[in-house]
Amino acid sequence: MSIIFIKNNKGGVGKSWLTLQLAHATSLLNKDINININNKVLIVTTDSQNNILDFAGLDIEIGAGLESWIYKGDGDLIRLRNNLEYIPLGNSNFTPTFKNKIKSTLYSLKENYDYIFIDAVPVAGLDKEFEEIADKIIIPAFMDVVTLQGINKFLDDVNIKKVKAIIPNRLNNTAYENKLLNEFKEVLNGTTILVTDPIPQTALISNLIAKNKTVWESSSKKIEPIQEVLGSVLELIVNEK
Image (cartoon, one colour):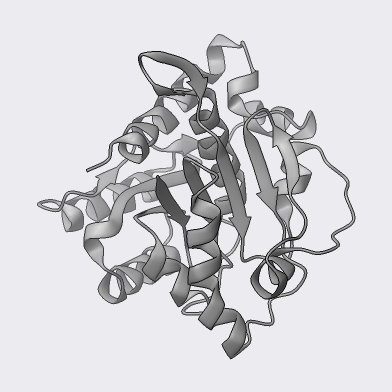
């Protein structure tokens, strides 16, 4: 069982959307090539906006969210798709008690799931406990100087061995963005971190979002390059190394 932490300290990079895509893909896989049983996957959020519910097409009032799980041992558990569930967050008031109990709560939840994805709040250092408990870290990114500077700082502060992939997202394919992408790849040359092919800014994704579908619920050939990008990250997620 692995805990996957999706983190960027800058908002608006598509973190929640990518979390849902990767978690849904993982839930579609068999947990063992020899048995026809799919992985059971949970998404936990530290972002009180709960955007994943919108992307999944659910209009649900948040009741007893992650706070209740931490303080009482149970709470909301929302089904997003087959084998894919979600624990929302009511507010981002991370008290010392909340932080002290989060690790034991996640360890308890681990008993019921093959993978747990953590959709992190885009604030530096606010969810350090989640970062520490994570087995693997995935970083969504924009190709702009501010975002890349933030990623470099994050890489300096985190256990870099946990960082498995950086996903350039919403690329407009400008010369400036491509220049930054190539320079960033050079900076990470020699590390084990995968910098994926970029996911373009495209109406294909906007249309799927409008229909509350993930990329895995589309049969369009045009979406296959995006599926391939996410598939390269999926391989790192399910690889136990």
